[in-house]
Image (cartoon, rainbow, N blue to C red; front, top):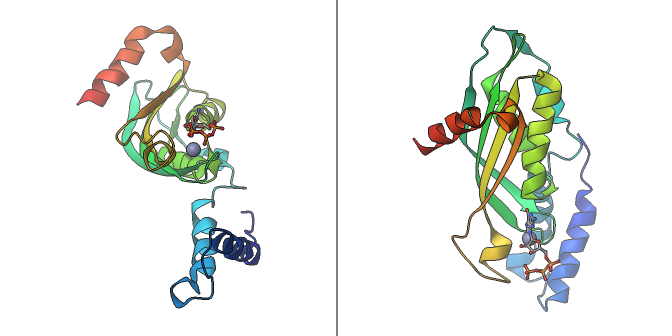
Amino acid sequence: MKEVNRPQIEEAVRMILEAIGEDPSREGLLDTPKRVAKMYEEVFSGLGKNPEEYFATIFGEEHEELVLVKDIPFFSMCEHHLVPFFGKAHVAYIPQNGKVAGLSKLARAVETVAARPQLQERITSTVANVMMKKLEPHGVMVILEAEHMCMTMRGIKKPGAKTVTSAVRGIFATDSQARSEVLSLLKE
Ligand SMILES: Nc1nc2c(ncn2[C@@H]2O[C@H](COP(=O)(O)OP(=O)(O)OP(=O)(O)O)[C@@H](O)[C@H]2O)c(=O)[nH]1
Ligand SMILES: [Zn+2]
Protein backbone atom coordinates (compact mmCIF):
# COMPACT_ATOMS: atom_id res chain seq x y z
CA MET A 1 0.00 0.00 0.00
CA LYS A 2 1.17 3.50 -0.82
CA GLU A 3 2.01 5.66 2.19
CA VAL A 4 -0.02 8.82 2.51
CA ASN A 5 2.00 11.91 3.44
CA ARG A 6 -0.04 12.97 6.46
CA PRO A 7 2.01 16.09 7.46
CA GLN A 8 1.65 17.40 3.91
CA ILE A 9 -2.14 16.94 3.99
CA GLU A 10 -2.27 18.64 7.41
CA GLU A 11 -0.36 21.63 6.05
CA ALA A 12 -2.64 21.81 3.01
CA VAL A 13 -5.78 21.70 5.17
CA ARG A 14 -4.42 24.50 7.38
CA MET A 15 -3.84 26.53 4.22
CA ILE A 16 -7.37 25.86 2.95
CA LEU A 17 -8.84 26.90 6.30
CA GLU A 18 -6.85 30.13 6.18
CA ALA A 19 -7.79 30.72 2.55
CA ILE A 20 -11.52 30.52 3.29
CA GLY A 21 -11.06 33.08 6.06
CA GLU A 22 -11.08 30.69 9.01
CA ASP A 23 -8.67 30.69 11.92
CA PRO A 24 -6.92 27.28 12.02
CA SER A 25 -5.74 28.02 15.57
CA ARG A 26 -9.21 28.34 17.06
CA GLU A 27 -10.01 25.50 19.40
CA GLY A 28 -12.58 23.68 17.25
CA LEU A 29 -10.23 23.57 14.27
CA LEU A 30 -6.98 22.74 16.05
CA ASP A 31 -7.13 19.01 15.36
CA THR A 32 -8.98 19.30 12.05
CA PRO A 33 -5.92 19.03 9.77
CA LYS A 34 -4.91 15.82 11.61
CA ARG A 35 -8.41 14.40 11.34
CA VAL A 36 -8.66 15.21 7.64
CA ALA A 37 -5.26 13.63 6.95
CA LYS A 38 -6.35 10.47 8.75
CA MET A 39 -9.65 10.46 6.88
CA TYR A 40 -7.94 10.87 3.49
CA GLU A 41 -5.62 8.01 4.36
CA GLU A 42 -8.70 5.88 4.89
CA VAL A 43 -10.84 7.00 1.95
CA PHE A 44 -7.93 6.84 -0.48
CA SER A 45 -6.55 3.59 0.88
CA GLY A 46 -7.17 1.86 -2.46
CA LEU A 47 -4.36 3.84 -4.13
CA GLY A 48 -1.47 1.51 -4.77
CA LYS A 49 -3.57 -1.59 -4.10
CA ASN A 50 -4.13 -3.97 -6.97
CA PRO A 51 -7.68 -5.40 -7.06
CA GLU A 52 -6.41 -8.33 -9.15
CA GLU A 53 -4.93 -9.78 -5.98
CA TYR A 54 -8.41 -10.63 -4.66
CA PHE A 55 -8.78 -13.17 -7.42
CA ALA A 56 -5.61 -15.09 -6.59
CA THR A 57 -7.61 -17.74 -4.71
CA ILE A 58 -10.00 -19.55 -6.97
CA PHE A 59 -12.30 -22.45 -6.11
CA GLY A 60 -12.34 -25.25 -8.66
CA GLU A 61 -16.12 -25.40 -8.71
CA GLU A 62 -17.84 -26.39 -11.94
CA HIS A 63 -20.63 -23.83 -11.81
CA GLU A 64 -21.24 -22.25 -15.18
CA GLU A 65 -24.38 -20.37 -14.23
CA LEU A 66 -24.99 -16.89 -13.00
CA VAL A 67 -23.42 -15.55 -9.82
CA LEU A 68 -24.72 -12.17 -8.71
CA VAL A 69 -23.73 -10.18 -5.63
CA LYS A 70 -26.10 -7.26 -5.48
CA ASP A 71 -26.59 -4.18 -3.30
CA ILE A 72 -22.92 -3.83 -2.36
CA PRO A 73 -22.68 -0.42 -0.70
CA PHE A 74 -19.74 1.65 -1.85
CA PHE A 75 -18.25 5.09 -1.18
CA SER A 76 -15.88 7.00 -3.40
CA MET A 77 -14.58 10.52 -3.99
CA CYS A 78 -15.22 12.23 -7.31
CA GLU A 79 -11.91 13.22 -8.82
CA HIS A 80 -13.23 16.57 -10.06
CA HIS A 81 -14.32 18.05 -6.75
CA LEU A 82 -13.03 15.61 -4.13
CA VAL A 83 -16.47 15.21 -2.62
CA PRO A 84 -18.16 11.86 -2.05
CA PHE A 85 -20.32 9.87 -4.36
CA PHE A 86 -21.87 6.72 -3.00
CA GLY A 87 -24.44 4.10 -3.71
CA LYS A 88 -24.76 0.44 -4.57
CA ALA A 89 -22.83 -1.87 -6.83
CA HIS A 90 -24.16 -5.05 -8.41
CA VAL A 91 -21.59 -7.50 -9.73
CA ALA A 92 -22.54 -10.51 -11.84
CA TYR A 93 -20.50 -13.10 -13.68
CA ILE A 94 -20.81 -16.52 -15.21
CA PRO A 95 -17.76 -18.61 -14.28
CA GLN A 96 -15.93 -20.85 -16.69
CA ASN A 97 -13.47 -23.71 -16.24
CA GLY A 98 -14.03 -23.92 -12.49
CA LYS A 99 -12.76 -20.40 -11.90
CA VAL A 100 -15.10 -19.36 -9.10
CA ALA A 101 -14.06 -16.52 -6.79
CA GLY A 102 -14.93 -16.03 -3.13
CA LEU A 103 -18.07 -13.88 -2.99
CA SER A 104 -16.53 -11.31 -0.66
CA LYS A 105 -13.80 -10.71 -3.24
CA LEU A 106 -16.32 -9.14 -5.59
CA ALA A 107 -17.20 -6.62 -2.88
CA ARG A 108 -13.52 -6.14 -2.00
CA ALA A 109 -12.69 -5.34 -5.61
CA VAL A 110 -15.41 -2.68 -5.69
CA GLU A 111 -14.25 -1.23 -2.37
CA THR A 112 -10.58 -1.04 -3.38
CA VAL A 113 -11.22 0.42 -6.81
CA ALA A 114 -13.57 3.01 -5.26
CA ALA A 115 -11.06 4.08 -2.60
CA ARG A 116 -9.20 6.64 -4.70
CA PRO A 117 -10.12 9.79 -6.64
CA GLN A 118 -12.51 8.32 -9.14
CA LEU A 119 -15.15 8.52 -11.83
CA GLN A 120 -18.16 6.27 -11.52
CA GLU A 121 -17.60 4.97 -15.05
CA ARG A 122 -14.00 4.03 -14.25
CA ILE A 123 -14.94 2.06 -11.13
CA THR A 124 -17.54 0.18 -13.15
CA SER A 125 -15.26 -0.74 -16.05
CA THR A 126 -12.21 -1.44 -13.90
CA VAL A 127 -14.06 -4.02 -11.79
CA ALA A 128 -15.43 -5.68 -14.94
CA ASN A 129 -12.01 -5.73 -16.63
CA VAL A 130 -10.21 -7.14 -13.59
CA MET A 131 -12.73 -9.96 -13.29
CA MET A 132 -12.54 -10.75 -17.01
CA LYS A 133 -8.76 -10.91 -16.81
CA LYS A 134 -8.41 -12.94 -13.62
CA LEU A 135 -11.41 -15.29 -13.81
CA GLU A 136 -11.71 -15.68 -17.59
CA PRO A 137 -15.47 -16.17 -17.17
CA HIS A 138 -18.18 -16.44 -19.82
CA GLY A 139 -19.01 -12.86 -18.99
CA VAL A 140 -19.16 -10.09 -16.41
CA MET A 141 -21.76 -7.43 -15.79
CA VAL A 142 -21.20 -4.61 -13.31
CA ILE A 143 -23.83 -1.99 -12.49
CA LEU A 144 -23.32 0.97 -10.18
CA GLU A 145 -26.00 3.37 -9.01
CA ALA A 146 -24.81 6.40 -7.11
CA GLU A 147 -25.60 9.84 -5.86
CA HIS A 148 -22.87 12.45 -6.39
CA MET A 149 -22.51 15.08 -3.70
CA CYS A 150 -21.04 17.44 -6.29
CA MET A 151 -24.45 17.40 -7.98
CA THR A 152 -26.34 17.56 -4.69
CA MET A 153 -24.81 20.12 -2.35
CA ARG A 154 -23.25 22.42 -4.96
CA GLY A 155 -23.36 23.32 -8.64
CA ILE A 156 -26.50 21.98 -10.26
CA LYS A 157 -27.97 21.03 -6.83
CA LYS A 158 -30.15 18.09 -7.76
CA PRO A 159 -30.50 15.89 -4.67
CA GLY A 160 -31.92 12.48 -5.45
CA ALA A 161 -30.57 12.38 -9.01
CA LYS A 162 -29.05 8.96 -9.50
CA THR A 163 -26.35 8.01 -11.96
CA VAL A 164 -26.41 4.45 -13.24
CA THR A 165 -23.41 3.01 -15.06
CA SER A 166 -22.88 -0.45 -16.43
CA ALA A 167 -20.01 -2.46 -17.86
CA VAL A 168 -20.99 -5.49 -19.84
CA ARG A 169 -18.45 -8.04 -21.00
CA GLY A 170 -18.41 -11.41 -22.73
CA ILE A 171 -21.71 -13.28 -23.05
CA PHE A 172 -23.64 -10.42 -21.42
CA ALA A 173 -22.67 -8.21 -24.35
CA THR A 174 -23.96 -10.63 -26.97
CA ASP A 175 -26.85 -12.41 -25.25
CA SER A 176 -29.76 -10.20 -24.26
CA GLN A 177 -31.33 -13.06 -22.29
CA ALA A 178 -28.24 -13.27 -20.06
CA ARG A 179 -28.50 -9.52 -19.46
CA SER A 180 -32.22 -9.77 -18.74
CA GLU A 181 -31.63 -12.46 -16.12
CA VAL A 182 -29.41 -10.07 -14.18
CA LEU A 183 -31.76 -7.13 -14.61
CA SER A 184 -34.77 -9.13 -13.43
CA LEU A 185 -32.88 -10.33 -10.35
CA LEU A 186 -31.97 -6.72 -9.56
CA LYS A 187 -35.66 -5.81 -9.47
CA GLU A 188 -36.43 -8.33 -6.71
N1 LIG B 1 -18.62 11.38 -16.10
C1 LIG B 1 -18.56 11.68 -14.80
N2 LIG B 1 -18.67 12.96 -14.43
C2 LIG B 1 -18.60 13.21 -13.12
C3 LIG B 1 -18.43 12.26 -12.13
N3 LIG B 1 -18.41 12.90 -10.92
C4 LIG B 1 -18.59 14.19 -11.18
N4 LIG B 1 -18.71 14.42 -12.50
C5 LIG B 1 -18.92 15.65 -13.30
O1 LIG B 1 -17.71 16.25 -13.59
C6 LIG B 1 -18.03 17.49 -14.21
C7 LIG B 1 -16.94 18.52 -13.99
O2 LIG B 1 -17.32 19.61 -14.76
P1 LIG B 1 -16.56 21.01 -14.82
O3 LIG B 1 -17.35 21.89 -15.74
O4 LIG B 1 -15.12 20.78 -15.09
O5 LIG B 1 -16.66 21.49 -13.30
P2 LIG B 1 -17.75 22.43 -12.61
O6 LIG B 1 -17.71 23.81 -13.16
O7 LIG B 1 -17.55 22.31 -11.13
O8 LIG B 1 -19.10 21.74 -13.07
P3 LIG B 1 -20.57 21.73 -12.42
O9 LIG B 1 -20.65 20.53 -11.52
O10 LIG B 1 -21.51 21.60 -13.59
O11 LIG B 1 -20.77 23.00 -11.65
C8 LIG B 1 -19.40 17.87 -13.68
O12 LIG B 1 -20.31 17.83 -14.76
C9 LIG B 1 -19.71 16.74 -12.67
O13 LIG B 1 -21.08 16.44 -12.58
C10 LIG B 1 -18.31 10.92 -12.56
O14 LIG B 1 -18.13 9.97 -11.77
N5 LIG B 1 -18.38 10.68 -13.90
ZN1 LIG C 1 -17.61 16.03 -8.83
